[in-house]
Length: 181
Image: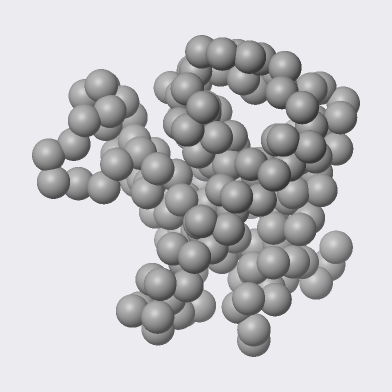
């Protein structure tokens, strides 16, 4: 088990999908307010939880695809946090790919720091617990958004989006997603 290789393999898949969608759709996500991105993340995480409980998908999309979407929406949120909700809606694809890499690298660095302190405890977690952690983080983000982005003693928005991104990567690693792709 090599966390670096597994993490990078998952991110490589997600990034390729993101870059391809940028070619198809441009940067239409730039129109979204942060609260809308949060709600989109909530929909994805809630669907995962529902599928974990019901164990049947009537739409045919699997849980892994939803975790991939969570990763990419978290990257979008991190980019929107940095660039602001106002501004150019049509960003250059190369610039977007560079920003994607920057945000993922920052998030991966956070993961390695936490992994050092927690001893890769995520490897012993259930995927359903990771889903619950993502949902909890989303509730936190909604509360922070309702407080105009201000916190008193808690981590801010970026840290919560980074944690959700990392939990989604961990879930995909545990599902052996990268090995199957």
